[in-house]
Amino acid sequence: MIASTSASRLARPPYRRFARFIVVGGIGFAIDAGVLMLALHRLAASVYAARALSFTTAVVATWLLNRVFVFDAARRGSVVAEYGRYFVTQVAGALTNLGVFVALIEIFPRLASTPVLPLAAGAILGAVVNFAGASLWVFRTREPGVD
Image 1 (cartoon, one colour):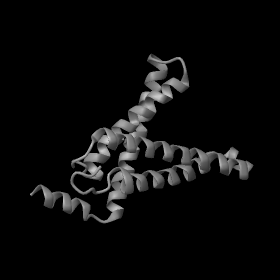
Image 2: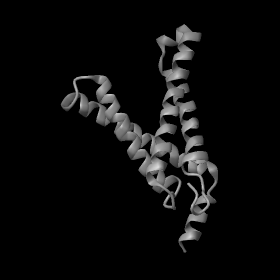
Image 3: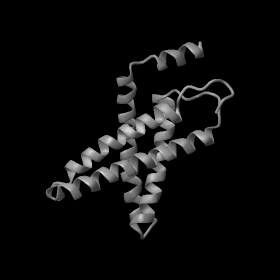
């Protein structure tokens, strides 16, 4: 019964999995923003320390949500290793997001007056990097006993 449930989740069309991934990302953004504001007002004098806490909290939350609701990752293997792969993937997506943002503003300086456009472009490419990393590396189906 469990195998058929896992198989049915894996058989979902890729766009449905991506849509769930985007919803989880939205929840992660809300957690990130909430923890950032809370940390700035209650815990940390430094915006960078608060940001490190909020990013880490959001990554843990989205990892757990993606495991359960997007990739059905309740399988054998090291949960610690899986989280490590997920964290690396999230950092790669964040760097991609920032890189696109900076590159677009440097190439097209007029975009600095409407920074939401390069922000959106960076967010889209960052989400693609994160989804690809999660699908192909973090939560990929493994043979039993292989990690």
